[in-house]
Length: 192
Image (cartoon, rainbow, N blue to C red):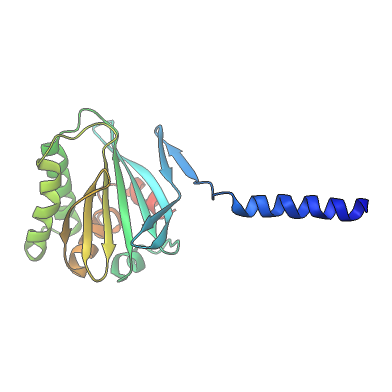
């Protein structure tokens, strides 16, 4: 009878554990808890890597790269036509919309060897996100790619625009992961 009672207790604890909600896991960088998994369009994307973009000795933003499967192959990530995304957290109260838009545009120019004419319309949609309203410390920007829609551009969970095309997704990826990234150390951290 005692053995049967112990088995029932173990069964009860196992069932209790199965009914508990899954705990979200975070990676803490610069006092920001960045999730190790995010849900996007009914799928789970995993944090591939994350790092801080510094400029003029200042921590400007924290950037995380989310993929369906972890990868260290920058070219495979850039050219894949699969859901993925970047999550950006503003780390400095000194960052303005104009500064962020200028830095993003410079990143595209550097990554694309100055040739952004084919993605200019999509890039303008992205830049408008930073210019339309003030940037605040800890604001979060998501650039999430869906093959059938393009890049979904969001601020603090509010979808602001879509920028269509695989070519634009590839250009966005090249800003952080290309041969001429905005910062080599950040690229290294995004690739895990």
